[in-house]
Length: 319
Image 1 (tube, helix red, strand yellow):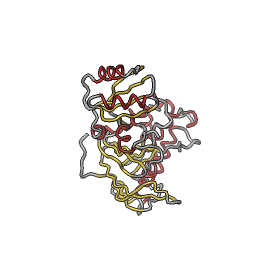
Image 2 (spheres, rainbow, N blue to C red):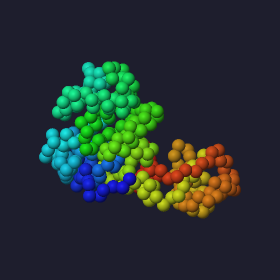
Image 3 (spheres, rainbow, N blue to C red):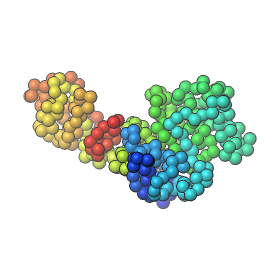
Image 4 (cartoon, rainbow, N blue to C red):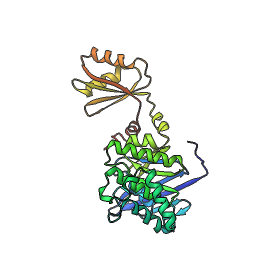
């Protein structure tokens, strides 16, 4: 999508959070999110993603720096900031004493909607989020995926400028994850600005217009998913399952395969970064056979966001 570079809805300068024990969760974070984009914070558990989202949504008090959300300083005017944001936390915060429909209706009333407007909006959102048939059901009767969709519906009930989602698909089965992706895509088409935190590469790649890869509270790289993957300088990743010691085989392949730039071992498999793709598989087979290695499985894939993360940190994104 084409971003309006003058229309920032989130802007931080030097945003920092230090917890007791001198634990620096977020370290001097400068970040700008533009109106209408889906922006992702991608990183492993403990990278500072949730703390960053917490400060932007007034739930965590910064130690230093500043943060503007919708033009409002979240520290100086937290109540005002809450009116322009919608938040979907990691944990289920639905009111279990209310029905599915009532969770939306009373949320709207809390934000000043009239009875008529809140009723109409609740009905419309339940239809949009594929929950209309569950309107009168108790919250406890919902599956994990349904409950997550209801939390997103509740978060947008008062039509916030920015929607925050913290690990929105954690713990969901693949079908529920895809269903939620579709919902977020629909909101995005309607112009909703979304900031999400995730440690799922596929989620960030699929949903985000731009994303920041972070670790230890710092931004390591920022750009579109395509820009970040291109920054690796690798055209293709060759995945090799081999009989014998993969470390020795990786050394041989890196040394003898033209265009090979790097190799790493993960789960007993070799991931070989290569510049150029023409005839790469036959060449790998030829080199392996020359040195007496038997290849059990061989495939080619494009560089991933995890490739970017590994190049920046030397470790898996999942760690």
